[in-house]
Length: 265
Figure (cartoon, rainbow, N blue to C red):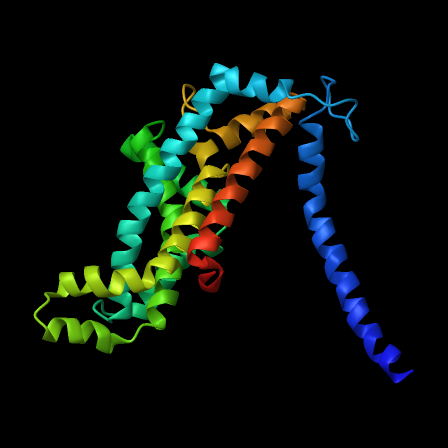
């Protein structure tokens, strides 16, 4: 009798957790099912199954152009954020910069500031500098919103680093940069992978900042999806969303198996 009473809270927690996970995944399931519908409008459950909507997306020049722009921005901003974020995190960790705590808070500001506010602020700044509508301006804007993820993950990795290892490399004749490149960088690599992945995904699916700064001749995949939904939802939107979900899931799974990056999130 006592065993049954002890198991009740456990079963209750398990049921609650399962319900929460199912609720969070329900929108994903609905989108994936709608992508295979044979009708030209969204129906759940789908009226028959087809891959035609995926073919339409992958053969549509508008979608292909948006995908290409999104990948350029995501890859470019991630690479720049890695370089800037690692340098900033290392300087903050070694207390090279005066007022490190204040600088850290400043670098983390885009994480807590509403994305719309960031977009409006950049819009005002770009209007004065002439960067609005340019690829460089859009890339720099994505760097602003992705750098904090690299800084945060790099600082988390560096906090568990034994500085004696780096000092030993210097004693053996390595320069400061060589000690960092050969000793420190490999040790914090899993954390950097985590930061890079979150930076890439954040850039890839950004709408609030991008929509303020793109020109009429530019569009990214999330902005195109947003615009398509405004005009009316059809299964092609669900199809491209499914492709994004699949690609993101595969990348996260491979990175987790290779680096175990969840420890740095």
